[in-house]
Length: 238
Image (cartoon, rainbow, N blue to C red; front, side, top):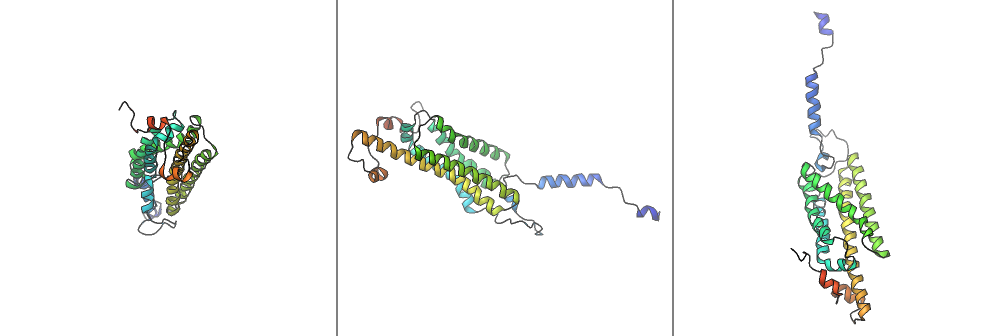
């Protein structure tokens, strides 16, 4: 009997399976910032940083901001490129700000529905940017704004993913926030530049006295006929 006590006991596979299940349940979403919070014993040695910063939450609405600007300048972008569905993109941008906030900030990656909606809408809008080259003719400034903001946004998104994998919550939030800023900022500058180019082109054609650059930039001016026809955000049939 004493020899039996010295033999190793049979492993309890049921207990090991329950531990595996608990470990799987404790794994957070791959985009869950709250998964970075260290345990109470402080056993995690990585740089976890704050759970969620206020600017991380607020910058989710950068998409909605550029969507509002697109809806406001709808006539100008439609005059420049009438084939592109600007109304659809403006609606999706307004929606994307809310979806980004719900997934990244409110649910913090813990809602599969919010995650799927955010990823689908964001992926579609990201692919729409180079797609504009097939609908719209652009000068060098427009091409630079579009390509630089799109490229920088993708690079920031990838960098944020690498910092997330490394367990660095602080830099993950910084680069993921830059991802939320770069594409909307490029879109905002593209829209405002396009508005100014439409006004300057029309002023030069009609030889308007309001063709001064500063006047058109801050006060606007008389636009072409297409501006009056396409300025309404909602289509005529709604």
